[in-house]
Image (cartoon, rainbow, N blue to C red; front, side, top):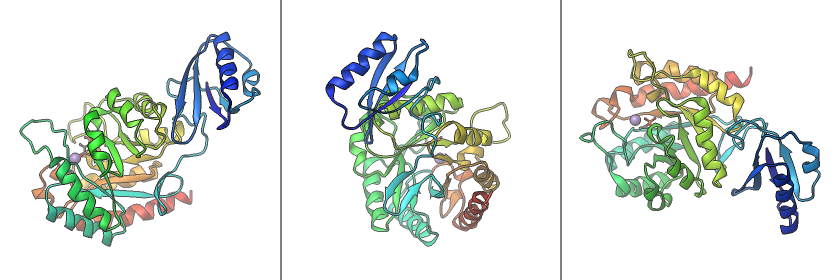
Length: 336
Ligand code: PEP
Ligand code: MN
């Protein structure tokens, strides 16, 4: 059960509500986010929802029996939008493109990528400065100094940035230089990290775990929301399956299903989703048709020279063609 509280609920009213929930043996958690306060009740007993809903100080009450609640569409039936500034909004009829290299490599690469994005009206640049690499001998990113340089240049060009945070300890240092925190597939169930990101008022893009189910992804998002941060988007980036012909299996089904289960925006990552450059475009287009609110792409001036993930990275001309097609596909979908 989710009970949304009135912003002017009194201490006595709240106390009475908690007593009432105790009477019906419901365990309660008080959630306080940047937008509202909620009481989450978990219990088994049947009760008349009106008996609680009509108590003073309550704005709304909903029965949600899934393990995830606040991220569920059963409660918030309208999709949620995430606003980055006056003119960048993610979700609810806005189509979002995010693009950039797998790893931030150099000042020159940052400048060239920004120029490419600006030419194409892409307002959010992706890139990793802390890279989770399968081998410890691979390039692991430029770290905080690379982030500061990148942030400064991107912001001067009016471009927002999204980058992966790998550890709780990095959040504080990074927060001043990040517009969207990315939680990578390998950290999708790092509950300490999710808890900590719940305390930050910055949007979070949460990727699905490599072997994560849809339910696990939604529960991971619930960690962030229930710790105070409602600004979450989910990302399908391919899962591990028995198929070895490509790097991952992009689960297009998940996009359609997530749009049914949650009010949060859903972003598709076809670069990691299939892991092969020549198939990124068709998979990206399919993801839009399945309902994605946006697409995140790996692009590089010279993909063959990229420090990481070059095999799935689009060249600038390839990316330009795809941006156009994706925008067309989105417009078409919106007419359905
Ligand atoms: C990335 O975005 O470059 C990345 C490492 O993604 P994932 O966590 O999905 O593997
Ligand atoms: Mn990558």
